[in-house]
Image (spheres, rainbow over the protein chains, first blue to last red):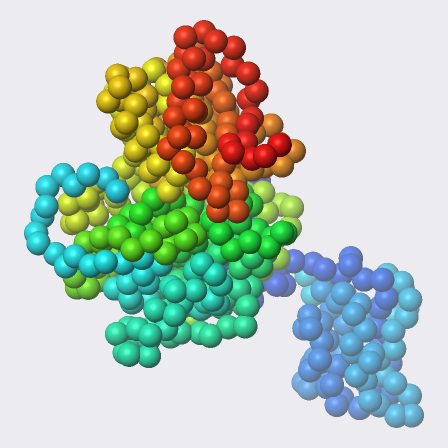
Length: 117
Length: 402
């Protein structure tokens, strides 16, 4: 976890303790900031239709397409903002494997949705 | 210009305009990058510096941009990459930079910018007043004001050290009056380029996004849990920069033999009344005060060379004993209770008891001259107030046909 997001002794850092100019002095800490609540639509993944072309993974701006051994296995619901790019890019035929549905909350039946935090 | 304490050594003396002094200081600083767009009356700086680039006098990467918004954006990029960068502008150019001014200061990028004061449209006018930099006074840039070409030369060199000071890390504007100062040819004593290089030193950037050993993100989204603290840290650095300005000024005075006070004062040892004025018009005020003091009138002048951060403690110390103060400004703050310097000064003086009576004059908008005769009237009114006459209107407009 990045220093600047770390809660020290239960309090947030003071002005004098922050890095200069709002820089983030370490990398890979986007994972610490959940943006899933921003969603107004959600991607529904159809495993049976997926050809594992990985276009969704390539285009996802939030690194929220979860892969295992080169195959799409689900969505990182804590970081997916519901932008719809995966649904737009999905190329499988005759049925799309990634389809957007209205509403940000995943139903329990949408089992491919997966948490990482 | 401050009076020399003692000439350290004989140096090159040249005739330079205000713009020329800024450009030659930039040449001797030899920044890594300059991105600038020409605008009257700053144009000569860009022209002259571009010649230095073309002639190989500097190793600077000169970025010819298509607007001032791009100029300052390119500077932000260069500074974030750890470079020593400079630009320069005026008036509408500064207005077009407005958005990026806050990005430069918020990201704590030590950019140095000679800023030739010219009024803002409309009606369109190319002449000098302080409307442009005053409209940017809350952008958290350090704003230094110069009265002559020598001061522009000295201040531009010092500005690099002030901006890059480890406790400061903020951009600096070096402001001076359009035409009256920018195009007036004056005597300037220059340091050797080697001396300037030694004084400014190698850049030691605190923020460097091109360091692969230490990868960082710049310009990230900062939401309510952290934003306030970032702004507070920046504000504290700006307030504290007055110490760095003094410290760099002392070091530069030793090198150049020219003292570099925060306030230039005249006659304040025994003055009963005082005029406060920034940059060139402060010089006219001082000349007028000299004439009046020969007639035995106890008048004084305070010319702050630093406007942001506002040198409140120094101003109060200089003015606490006088009976009446007039703040004469080449800028107005339409609809406000006073022009910008007056607002700042009144706030700073409020805690004094007793405190001087204070009045405010707006003068010289759009480049109209402020004469010694007009200053004499200001001083006479102040002397009347000091004797107990009614203060009268707090805000007045010198020489405007109303």
